Image 1 (tube, rainbow, N blue to C red):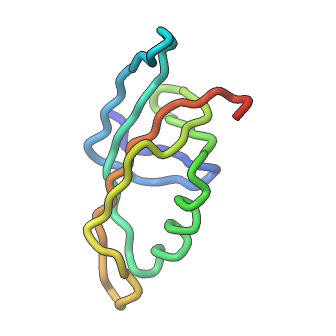
Image 2 (cartoon, one colour):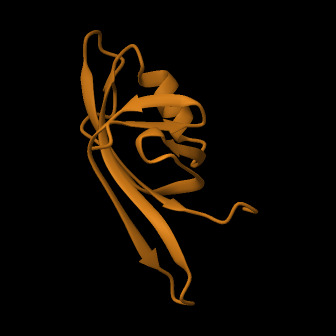
Length: 101
């Protein structure tokens, strides 16, 4: 069971991790992962700044996978976590991209 992913050297404790392969219209196959994670008000600024990068060096330590991925889908339970002691539920889906992009 995967419980950690690393995005651009930032480690996230994740739940509900799911990995699959998807095929594009030209027959190319790409890896796609989705997972949930919690973000506290103290982490909010750093995590949202990270996510604005849109493309990441993704590492999945448990499976020893590393590849470049971009945000395919993203949602959060809160849009403003600057309130003290607030915790938001984030959901993220990433899809593999060619390393030249």
